[in-house]
Length: 404
Image (cartoon, rainbow, N blue to C red):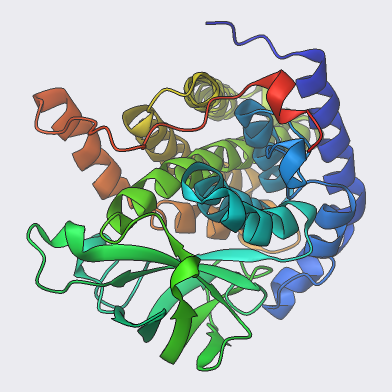
C-alpha cells in the first residue's frame, strides 16, 4: 500500500486548487448570503472536465482514479461545501453507481452525457420516513407492461432543481421479505410527465448549493430505465453510498484544512499582550489538534480510495473515514471560530461559514450515529459484506484512459 501521490494526482490537485481559488472563492460568499445556488459552479466544473474526472474515457470521462476524485473533493470543500456536494451527488452517488450497475446500453444513454456534463445527475433515496432507515421508503413503482408507474416524493435531494437525471429508488414489491428485497432502482428524467421539483429554504449551511424535493405523480418510466434487476435496488443504493460517503469524507477533510490554514494565518497576524496569539500555548493546542485531525482524516480517505482502486469492498473503511472526517470538521470549524474570537462569530471571516457547512455532513449520507453502528456491527461480527456485484469497479489506467 503506497500513499505517495503520483505526478498525475499532484497535477490534478494543483489544477483544481487553482481553479477553486480563482473561479469560485471570489463569489461564493455572496451566493451563500443570498441562500441561492452559485450559478457558475456547474458550468465551470463542466468546462474543466471535473464532473467526469474519475470515469473512463470511453464513457466521456477523464480516466483518473478514485484517489483523484478524493483530492478533487478536498480542494473543492476547501473553498465551500456546496462545490463538493456537486461532485458527491453527480459523480459519487449517481455516475459511479451507473458505472458499476448499468448495462452498456444504459451507460451510453445516461453515463456518457453525465460524464461530459451535458446532463446533471442526482440521487433520490431519502424520504420523510426513510433517511437512516432507507428500507422504509414509500415511493412505489408498479409495473404495467413495458413501463413502471412511479409515485412518491424524495426529500433533501441535492441538485434536485438543477439535475436532468435522477437515480430513484422505489418499492416494486411492498410485501417482500426481508423488506430490502422489494426495492428497485430507476433512472427518471426531469422531462418525464408527472415529475416536478421544489427547493428547500432556510438551511443552516451549504446555502450556495441546491437542496430540494423530487415529486413523482404517475410517472411512466420505461422498463429499460431500470438499473439492475427487480429487487436489487437496496444493494445498488448501498454501493452508491459507499462512493458518496467517500466524497463526503474527502470533502470534510478539506473543511478541516480550511479551518487549519485560516487559523494559522490569523494566529500569526493577531496580537495580544504584545505578541502574536500564535505564541500562546492554548492557541498552539488548537492548531495542533486541527493538524492531527487533518492528517488522520486524509489517511483514512486515502485508504478507502486505494481499496476502491483495487476493486475491494470498502463499506467499513469508507464509513469510518466519513464518520471521523465529518465529526472532526465540525470540531475544527468550532475551534477556528473560537480562535478568531468575535471576528469568528461574524461573516467577515470564512470560518463561520465553515462551521455552518460542516454540520450538515454529520447528518447526510448516513449520520454519525449510523456510521458508529456500522463500525460496531463489523467489530462484533454482526455485519459482513455480502457478495452481489457490490465490489467497486477496479481502476485500470490503461483501460480507463482508452478511447471508445
